Image: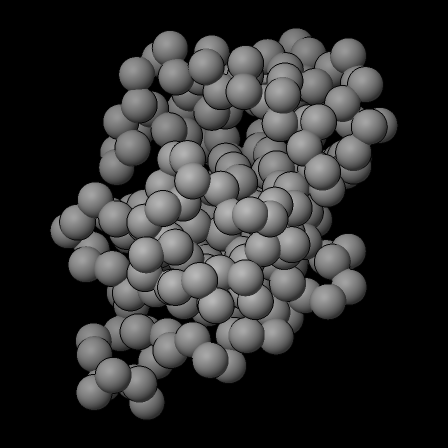
Length: 222
């Protein structure tokens, strides 16, 4: 199995399930998009392998200026405002996708992939967004020490923005899971698979292949 086939299989398994419930053909559409994503400025990716089997992957790139208007970016801009968009997000490392195969979840693999695509950002300016309805994903990023910069209603169709652990603006974003903020809201209740990240220092990954920019785009396996 090539990396491309493995990436597609993991995508279909991860995003075909709740709460995303994407149709099977969305995995094919993602692979088509990935072919152009690798040409984006600052593109970087990590692929987790056990032998030749893909167990997970993550991709990231540099958020351009001006701030994009497609997908759900307009919603993010409306919530954060122009000044924060420019200071916090534009020019920063944006984690676009992260997915782990079913048998790799709860092993710490997701956290390792997230770290792999952000660790080389010297200024720490990394961010991502994820659907507000994805409760497990929200708690995963909170446990990984990412700070929510927006606080959408969990029942809505909006997205939550997270700032990375070393992002210089994280001190200005209030985390709704922190009882010192916003009138002591209820704490995040973490699923067992996410709690395991606290104690796990290594997952079942035997090989973590990390490539950046043109080297990865030229790989026949990706």
